[in-house]
Image 1 (tube, rainbow, N blue to C red):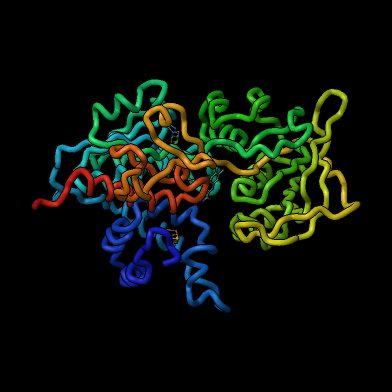
Image 2 (cartoon, rainbow, N blue to C red):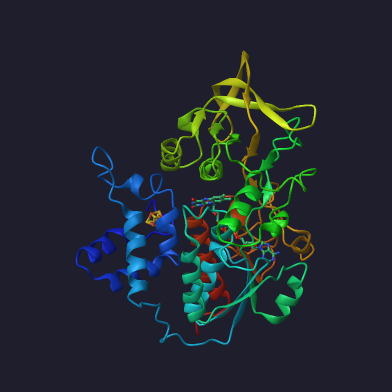
Length: 437
Ligand code: FAD
Ligand code: SF4
């Protein structure tokens, strides 16, 4: 049960053992609309493989790799989801966001006989699978193949359409029976470091996106619109030449690991990751930290950044940090980093990448529709209505609008977004297709 989509792992391992790959692919898809993606990018050491009973002392079964193998092999053999028995219901749902949550929702709607039309502001599907996760972790051909599969299931994509700008959510509600929001989490966490406006300091996502677009042979120009930039950083997203440069990445999450590993591939001379707590407290996957180390990244733990230092021309020269020790746990049980007196130093840098994370926000066009958010910007779903009635899971404060993924949970994982998109589709089907009396 540590797998968030509750995959039938022992059962498909058995099918692979017996070389029954197509049955295994069918079983994988019964719980997970994106098995080939999760097999590649899940932090398995924290999830399925971390719970494998062989993990203690022997090393876990490589569950993620097997899941990827099953799906890749079945696709190569021509297998596709079989929807021939699905009866069209005549219902139609607009899905906003072609990331993992939106894709999973559309997949399950199609299987329930509900027409799904997926809108995304970008010209390709995948959300952060396409424009965030680097291609050395997830080759973009995987997403292109999945798009073919989804279109083969009758799912329609309307790309390059931003809801709230090119089309209103009111129009969607007029045209469709329900709307699912899988709009992700794109508000940067602003550390507010003094001097962060210096040349050579840039936020993580535009850095990764531009690099990804260049690697994929796409025009990197559109990147400025990727996420809501911190005030003053709007023009600071141009990818610098990292060849031979000293790069410091601030932040110890998976995004930080993607930045350090991308910087290595861009020819940086020295790459340092500074994190304010100890190694055991890092939010990123231990496997990714190991990969980064193997590729030559240096980690400085217990270093809290205080300010960016710059020269007379306003170019970054380093990061002033203070050494920390772990103090008392905070409200969430995480131990705070407490600065140590006299522990200040400067890490020299030509480029600083800030990877402090992202959070969602409820856009004005949703708020205007009466859709409520939590104080930290997540779309509110489930719970009870004002008159005491229960809402369906993933149902927002508007009865015909559902939401899931990072927009509801805050920045998390592909597999949790998949689980929520899948389960939200179930809730939408429950609302649209009540059982016959
Ligand atoms: P997203 O993937 O963000 O998709 C949201 C989509 O909605 C986007 O395509 C966006 O364009 C679209 N959208 C938003 N607003 C509108 C609008 N108004 N109109 C039309 N379209 C709109 N997770 C892992 O499990 N493993 C990893 O290795 C991993 N690496 C990561 C690396 C980076 C750099 C980042 C940033 C995240 C990483 N994650 C990883 C997290 C994971 O990518 C996300 O949790 C997941 O993609 C969330 O899925 P989602 O569908 O909720 O949102
Ligand atoms: Fe493991 Fe992720 Fe696959 Fe679940 S979806 S079995 S957590 S790799």
